[in-house]
Image 1 (tube, helix red, strand yellow):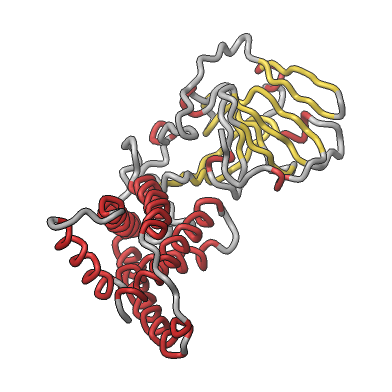
Image 2: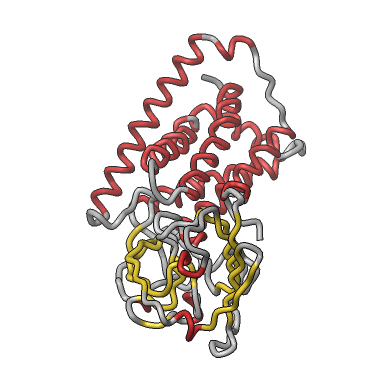
Length: 335
């Protein structure tokens, strides 16, 4: 291994780490653990490549005083962002969360990870590394295999440390940790990106439900005729989860009998999510027997068992039903 090959490897490894991290961000159930392990192994390959990358960095820093090479600032910021992504990822695995703070460790990890990917592409464009036919030789693959094996051992060590430092059962396959308190008041008030808690008058609030070319408005008092209950885990992409009993009305009750297809659920902020219509979709007006607070989505929010928290639309004002497939919508909101 040499500096040039290390650069080529990093050009693949950093985006791959981001891709597996994105999959963990999206997946709320199913085969999450394999993706999580792969994400850790790929990320720790960056650490394994340090001995071959560090001489390149030192040469750049020595030349800094003599001449200004293109992309020097980009290189330095890239290095810092990669280190921060690694540190915050490991810190989160061992159980440091800061769930009540403005930014959790996992959110910081995601933020600097995205920055690292953008800077990796910029760095590659500024300082192109040409591949050679010998890069695909058997020797190169053996070297990469050895480095991957070392990364796997490091990942096993990180996971073992996380298992020893955290109580059994409080960490989900997504990597989220159970909140220290099961109290409703302990649930952090979160929203998508820069959405603010809207001011909604409960007496004048109406839910518009559109299906089959017709529409009907429902008041909060009309929805109260049902008391459907659903115990579900809210798994936030901020790195925490809580299991609560949510009560309200199943969405299927508000639609024509036997309706299938999908529903597009829209918030008062304009935020929306399209989901397959199932009996598990609940429009919750209360949590643990207590009416929702404005910060937690009052007067009504969506409960989507098995999906990450960003699908649980708050402050719902409109539900539209049609036969469009759920996958026509981007996996992450663009609003």
